[in-house]
Image (tube, rainbow, N blue to C red; front, side, top):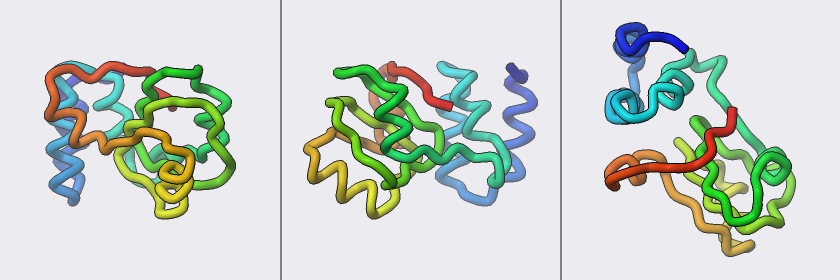
Length: 118
């Protein structure tokens, strides 16, 4: 686990203002998530639907601090919160009636809880 100061220094190097705002908002409540969001672009997390299906339990909220990709299928009823979604993943999630939302929208709510997938 890195310090909040190191997370702040990493976020100053980011050029996406939405990502910087997300990191700063999450840093207070969930330092692990802020650390994962502040990783360099080449190390950012990308998860396919089949990987989420393997790691998640039915009825669970899953937080992906990166992009959700559309490879594979998701047969469990989970709620996915992610930084972004690919278009193929969105189509499959809509088709399977899986609830999903963006990380920025969830931060605006009072408290965000769920399992962070690395």
